[in-house]
Length: 166
Image (tube, rainbow, N blue to C red; front, side, top):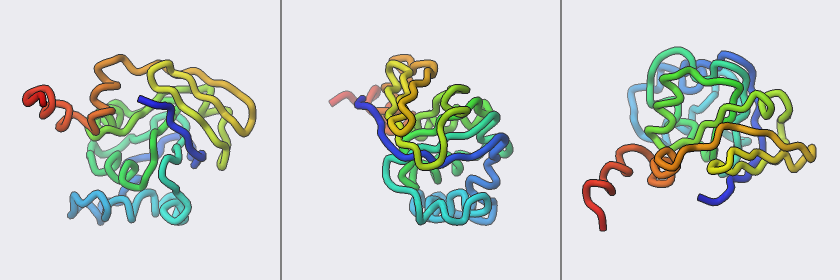
């Protein structure tokens, strides 16, 4: 997997799934519809500002709250290439992997990256470079099997490929 590169959208601690995708939109599983409402109650300008490949950087306990796959689907559908946080709610972390959204734990990046900074992220090595500030941060690298799940686009596609190799 090649390095990810994008601009930072910065949020604080305890960003819960209800503000990632408000409950009033849970009547759909359309990724495009979910993406259109991603973070609208926390950051109304997010959807118009986010560009493909951008990166969310947040504080501790990102994705707390309800255990809905809609939240990482909305983020991925909005074009975000990965989420970096000081920590994640366990169910959000697993749901993100399941839908193919890379999530990295890095207290350093959470403390150092600011809105608009440009980052490159190497998932396999756990390296995060802040090109704007000339800083480098560390994250736990993804093990090979998680890298394969992410590269496949999520757990369902990964399983399909394993069961039906081309």
